[in-house]
Amino acid sequence: MSENVETSTGLSPNIAGALCYLFGFLTGIIFYFIEKDNDFVRYHAVQSMVVFGGLFVVYVVLGVVGTALTIGFLGSIIGLIVWLFMLVLGLLTFVLWLYLMYKAFNGEKTRLPVVSDLTDKYSGKEIVA
Image (cartoon, rainbow, N blue to C red):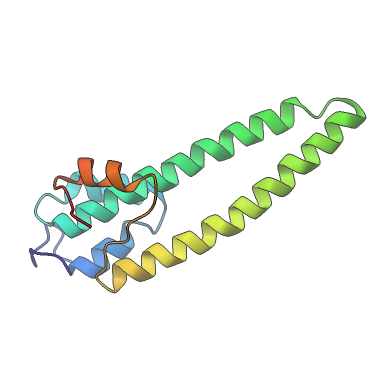
């Protein structure tokens, strides 16, 4: 669990950490700015912003590309492929969302490939794995 027990929000660290993921990057942003004392909560807030903010950008790009390429028969096939990819990505995102909330609720800092360095850098403390 976190080194500091107190949080700026008055919530227990595991509850605040899990809530960082509740509405994706939006709650991550909120907790990032209101939580100044607890490194555990800040870690999960930054991780939520990086992971779900990045996934949001991917969804927007795929939606624009999928829509732009749906001209003609070949475009319809490409659009279908993009739509199926987005469906699978959405299911994987949902599973990741549940997993990260569960781990935060249990007081664990989850290290994710690619985003962990950013999470460490912007949460305020370097974490040694």
